[in-house]
Image (cartoon, rainbow, N blue to C red; front, side, top):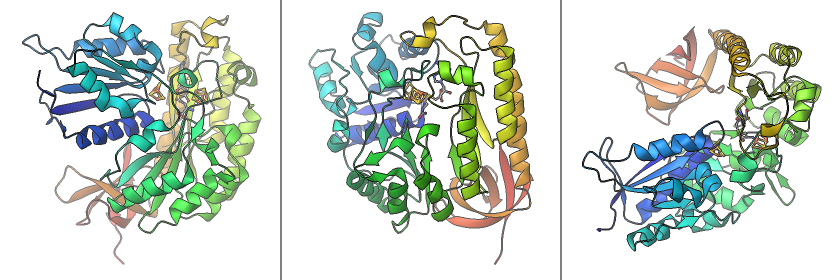
Length: 433
Ligand code: SAH
Ligand code: SF4
Ligand code: F3S
């Protein structure tokens, strides 16, 4: 067999997987491989999987099945990401087509594992050596005007429904110096906006440095216009981070702060370590620091034992906050997590009905948020070409896509007056000085 020359990486799940996928692409690129052209066959396919909700493993295996070519041959298939971590060697038993299994903390060894495949092996590497991979990865190249930077990985919170502490390991923070270095590489490559990633990003720490100090240091890099961070846990929403929202102009007025549910009984059963009023108090402080902040959250409906009253408490909390955006999910029992065996599992039909009601309310709120910006003038960071001639698309500080006619290019920042709210975006016109 000839050494594989082209690759394709398919990432599922959260932004951390998107980041990992980019780093794997850079790694394979440094080995002399090239990304397969769109639609073309790749010699190696990396499935960078997510394990968060139902049938995640089944979906990954059916994805593997779809990689068989018409002539019966198939590419070298690497199972990566959180399903790989959770399944380990079991993956090779369940699918003969999988050539190698590599977990989210071990993917820096991908080139070595591919050589083992060439030599006839079927390696599995699901070690969880915290942070080893970062030192072993190549330097960053161009990563787009808006780029992700993983600053913290893993989770020690053990919410009773969640697999992440098992697939990503314990909470670890990358050192400040490494992050400033990677950020500088990205800025040198044209990045104007950085989104700091972590399963609990606001738990990031390096000695006495906190996420707030990291943000301040990054904001001081010449050429870096914007900083964002996601995802935060309410119990790590420290006062210095809240103060940064008042004091650091580069820190965008947007906060994704999952609450999951509005009922204290359910929050306790979820092991969230906070009540609904703790959450409301954090939000009040954040809004006092920066009244323009847009809020986003994650919600789970139909957690075991959730009654109509509990669900109403979620709706009430949503009404009280007013979200600009949100993600909501039906509770999905994950094998091995404590909630999977709790009494009071909620029937699917009730989950469906609750999800619909919650999503209708959240959609209404995000529509209202977009409408509230019509007539306002703001700065957008252009990140895409629009469909119509002369049209470009940029992001507002509140993460809305804004369409505008301009000769400015990708990476430019322009002032626009927003003139109309569309279902998932805004239309605007250029402000002339
Ligand atoms: N703190 C994490 C959350 C990861 S999972 C982060 O940094 O992103 C993203 C969201 O998926 C969670 O906030 C939760 O709302 C949802 N989720 C996690 N496990 C789930 C499950 N078993 N069923 C349904 N939704 C779940
Ligand atoms: Fe999962 Fe909870 Fe950790 Fe988020 S904080 S990753 S929901 S265990
Ligand atoms: Fe999914 Fe793993 Fe992210 S389970 S949500 S890809 S941390």
